[in-house]
Image (tube, rainbow, N blue to C red):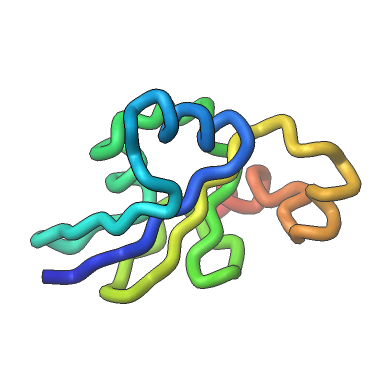
Length: 98
């Protein structure tokens, strides 16, 4: 079965810790799924995810996951300089157009 490695940052790091989850954690799935479906499966509120990195690239939440992917959910509120350096300044608007 396919596996992805899931990482959480900032506020989501504490959510993982509250739930007793490893960070990063390995998630195994049977049916094809997108990053957003995984977010739902993990019961992470949509408003708590601003961008998702898949294999170190910003991707739309609608991106299908592949075996071996590394996925990182990043919440809103990352300071502006880091948003620019990480490359997701304005990514939410781009995702909405996709």
